[in-house]
Image 1: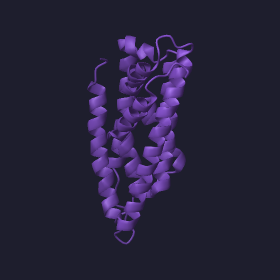
Image 2 (image 1 turned 180 degrees about the horizontal axis):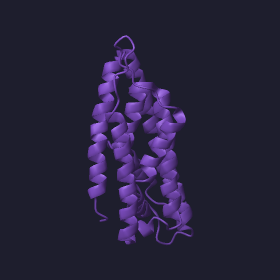
Image 3 (image 1 turned 45 degrees about the vertical axis):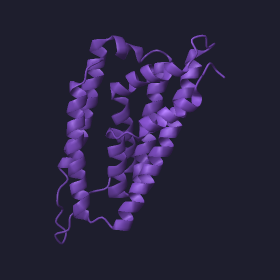
Image 4 (image 1 turned 60 degrees about the horizontal axis):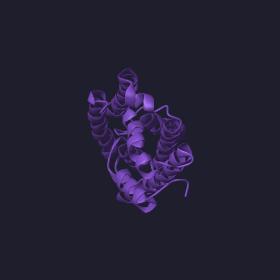
Length: 210
């Protein structure tokens, strides 16, 4: 149907790829652990919106520019790396707030968390190249509308990813609440995640097109 083949394999492969840890998972878990599962879900919605941007761009051929133009790839790569490092600095600079010697990690508005998830995903050119390399393998060469088949597969991938990410957010948030994570632990969680984001930002900046 729609020129799509091996759909069960696509779904299984996509699920396994979504489970792999990366910047998106780190952002979801950090927000869920420090602000509750709703904050994690806000990050998930931003990430899923970013994924759809990549899917639609790839379907109309825009992402192909990233695959063929070294300059375009470099520009997007450095912007994405800079944004990830910007978030890392914010996490690393979480400070002690003097209020009866308590440590308070200021919560972020859900809109800002959504924007973080969106930009983290959209500004990662590796995501665009992933869709160009992975999705076409499940589209028949003789499909009547390859862009439509691409969008359908992209939506399926995104939906499955959303289910996994929401489950991750809820599990992390509930586990954090049950364990009653102390403010000091939340502070250090931000710093550890910030350190990981520094590594991911540098890794993205040094990544190659192929």
